[in-house]
Amino acid sequence: MATRKIFTRDFILSFFAQFAFSSVFCILIPTFPIYLSSKGSPEAEIGLLIGVFSVSSLILRPFIGRALIRIPEKKMMISGALLYAFSSLAYLFATPFWPLFIVRILHGIGLAFFSTASFTLIANISPEAHRGESLSYYYLAINIAFVLGPYVGMLLINRFEFSVLFLVCLVLSLFSLSITTQLSERKNARFEDLSMERQPFLSRGAIPSAIMAFMVNIVWGAVTAFFPLYAISHGVSNPGLFFGALAVMHIIGRTLGGRILDLYPREKVILPCLLAYILSMAILAFSKTLPMFILVAVIWGIGNAFLYPTLVAYALDNAKSSLGPAMATFSAIADLGSGLGSVIMGVILQFTTYSIMFLCLTLTGVINLLYFYFSVRKRGEEKYANLRIPL
Image (cartoon, rainbow, N blue to C red; front, side):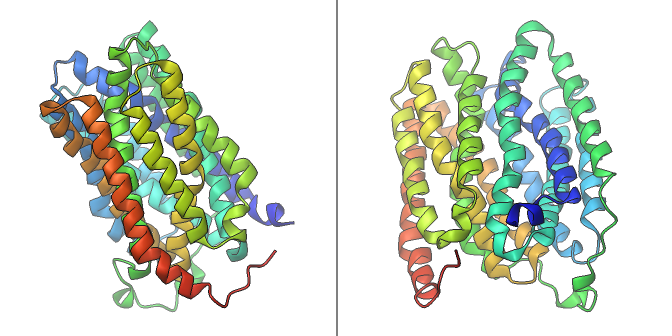
């Protein structure tokens, strides 16, 4: 069975290491903007401190991806978990702006090491015919973290001081580090005959899906930065419920529909997912109550449940053997979207309103759809014209 080939020992260990690692990020999604606001940071500064986390990670990703041709993924994941642990501890002492700015950079670098290496590991150990399904299952580690993380984070800051929040992040980082050390000592034997000088820093085949992920993450970066404050302003005491509902839809979609990613051309999966992004942001622009926020999370979650694994698989499909550089290219460009999303929308928000900002995100989704339809989709139609989809 395909699932037996997918759920190997290293897959399961990496899954739980990813879950603990992602939980740190998810706990901070609704709480970090509130923490900065409590310290007196204005919206533009909040957007910058949140955005630099993603931007800092993208700078190193091409180098990490190239290095993964020779260096085992396990070592890179250990480095990332160590940086996450150090950053979580440093949050206890760093204050806005510059000390915290430096910590956020280090935290982002930790993300670059761990996530680039972990997804490259999964791509390398998964059967090629079931790569989409494997990635979909692996993303469940992040999705489960999204179910628990934001809700737990809000509970922590509502009942305790922010120092307790950062200590929990430290414990989770160390737990991820402990699991990562148990991974097999795997050599990248398939690349041993390749010269490092001939390996690219960037993968051209990964760029189309990376551009789409970039625009998707503009939306993601802005919503994670400012939705918690928007929800609280409308009387929602725990914005983590929104992210919890979003993650539940991710889990349902990726559990029940993981095999869909390998049964149909990637382009046929991407189109309805992009439409779901546009619809959800348009509704959010006019939503003011918790039930409406949950509706947005459901629509957005259904689209994203299939979209992101499909984009990753699409990048790896076009990369052929250069999986490390492909994963690095995809992640770097995608992370740039997360960083710019919070920064740009923070500036827009300072001069307009939340509704206008969310409408700007809707427009971003429309631009993404147009790029896909007129550039990527037509190329995909030629690719699959004479291809039989295996059942």
